[in-house]
Image (tube, rainbow, N blue to C red; front, side, top):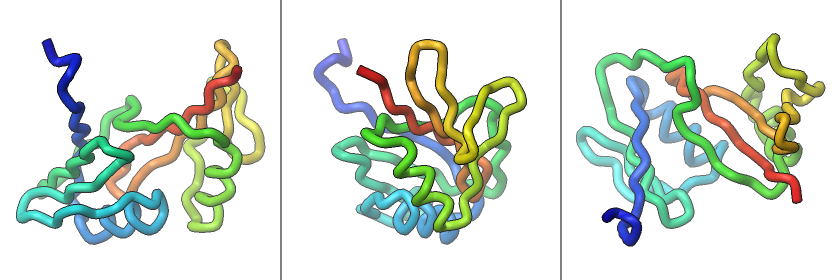
Length: 125
C-alpha cells in the first residue's frame, strides 16, 4: 500500500541548536525548515524530521542510518569534528571505529548531541 509513497524519518532532540549544527555542519544535510516543534532536513530526497522535545531518552539501538560509498572517509571527517566513534566491546573495530560485519558490510556507529545512535554502512560488492 505504501510502496509508492515517500518515507519520512523521525528522531528527537532536546537541544535544537546543537542538533541543527550537527546535522548541517558535520553530516552536511540541508535544513529546509526550523518549525516550532521540528527541524526539517533534506536527506537526499527523504525528509528527516527532528522533533523538538523537553527531554530525550536515547535508545540503545540504531536510531537512523545512511548507506555511504566510503565509510572510512566519513570516519576521518567525523574525527576532524571531534565526533568519536561508538565503541562496542562485542564488535571487532579498527582504529577508526569501523566494524566489518559478518556479511562483509563495513559499519561505523556514532552519536548525535542527544545521544541518538547513528550508523553508516558501506556494502561490499
